[in-house]
Length: 217
Image 1 (tube, rainbow, N blue to C red):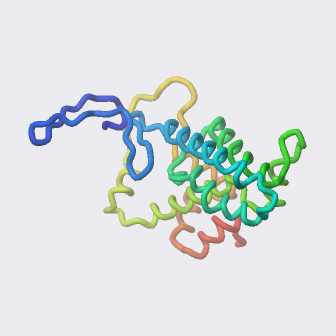
Image 2 (tube, rainbow, N blue to C red):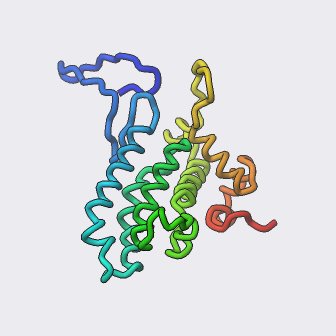
Image 3 (cartoon, rainbow, N blue to C red):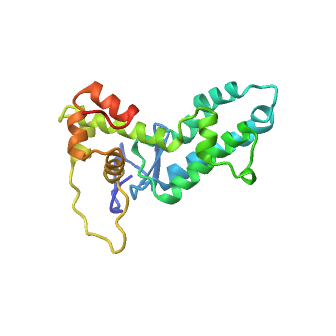
């Protein structure tokens, strides 16, 4: 598979032609030749919705099972199914909304309410003592960004991340990139990219920044 500008490449191994594909699953993640994550994110959402329907009548809706047990299963099974590989996501508004809906589908059922009750998502998360999924994803993304910054410059992952790809700009709104996503998260926490990069060197300061919000000067 060629990622980026589609290009046909003929590769033969022991006289056999290797098929060039448009998508390829590696370590459980669906990679696409256009470099976008739509297929993988849709697959995460579909898998989690299937999981919800499997568990709903036999587990989530059972009144004899405590909320605490249901939340433990949410953290151990449901959320990981939905957010697997989220460290590398660059979500647009529509994708964030869809993922939020799948998250709240489970939590509202645990709480025993529906959207008709008009209870805010934030209130449900607070009552169940659950970190909002978007916050969870952002922490995972910041942790991966910090890991990349601390990586040896010789590591392939860091070299690929730092590589500058030259390509013609397309008309319309620029596509959301992973670096843009990280920049927005950092700025929302009151820091610049450079300040966050400096903090990433010190494990303690970075932990406070990621898990405790703005740190005190």
